[in-house]
Amino acid sequence: MNEKSHDDRRIHLNPAGAGRMPAAVRAVLTEWTRFEDRYGPYELDERLDDVLHREIHQRLAARLGAPPEDTFLCTGAADAFAAVLSRLPLGPRDRVWTTPYESAANLSAVFALRARTGCRLEVVPLRPDGDLDLEWMARHIGDNVALACVPYVPSGCGIVQPVEDIGRILAPHRCLYAVDASYAVGQLPVDIARIGCHLLTVDGWRFLRGPHAAGFAAVAPRLREALAPHGGLPLVSPHGAAAAALNEALALHTAVSPRNDLAAGLRAAVEDTAGTELIAPGRLQSGIVTFRHENVSAALVRRRLADRGVVVGKTVAQEVPLYLPKLGVVTAVRASVHHDNSPEDIELFADTLKDAVTGTRPLPAPARHPRPTAPAPHAVPSRPTAAGTPHGRPAGRRHLTLVPGRPRDTGLLRPGA
Image (cartoon, rainbow, N blue to C red):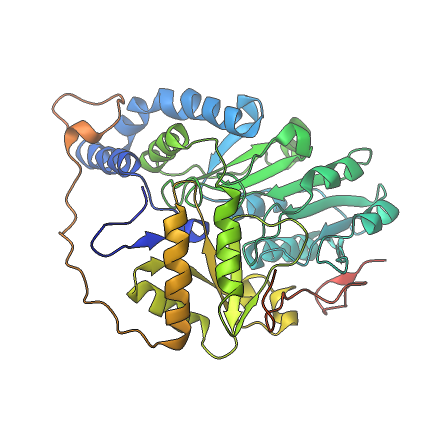
């Protein structure tokens, strides 16, 4: 549900950071949390057995194009990625590929893998337009490349990676393929069979608008077999109430992607604002638009937008440490659209962004909102319950891209061959 009223025109343009849970999802989370408080965790798990062991996996399978037995619940994408890498049986002769767009959390797991196994890490270089250099990958792939890690859509910018093309390059080789789809699922179609990956990890609280600390992963049989002699798949399941709420979010979420004109409108609004720089590498963009202003800090832009009724996010350069710092970016504003945003939302964003970077328009008087109350029992979707329990770019604007060519030796990663 979009946070907007006729009085204060508040809109939410931050599903990439945290999607706003629909009322039905919040109600499920609230009521099952109350149930556990009254009856305890064992009773909760028993009542949710069908939801957690059958229903949610069927919904995940339909969403991802994977068999239900390949889907697993977890506390988040980064947790699942780190857990899998902690048991991956690699050695000093193995090569691991990552990209300049990898998140700091996933890079930490990759560094830990290198420290444990002695494997060699390489950063896939970028083309002049900011896309990954697939020709470089095709030339340098070999059976000593044991793992390739790619974010479908990075957290720090809106580029869409060619994950299906990468899968075709890797398929004839022994390389395991891991895709972080946290910023893709819910805004882009994701089909594991077409991607060809062995591990796909997702946060459930972004574009899917589920609760925090509830995510999921798809793990191919080949990867599960590789992990079996080393302790198996070490994923931690989310809390039962959070998993039930995620199940509801999956049931409610439409398969329709956000309208292309909404994201284009966001980019146009940024480009039409004096002093802004889009951080938009690559030829294909998603519903995430990242930018900075030459004079106004990202924190101040974000706060001024919030004061004017527009909620956006902020990106810190060290969240994508192999890409954003090389551009000289310290912080940036990140706006994103969900399928329930409207063209009117984009028009309001365009107007308020100009005000936010100049600070000229007086702030509106703060609107008074009623104190949140617990959802009514009838708002809770049907679930097993206990009796008696409640239920043309302007001049002066530019896109930022990383200097192409072979990746530099960062001191942490070895450059590509």
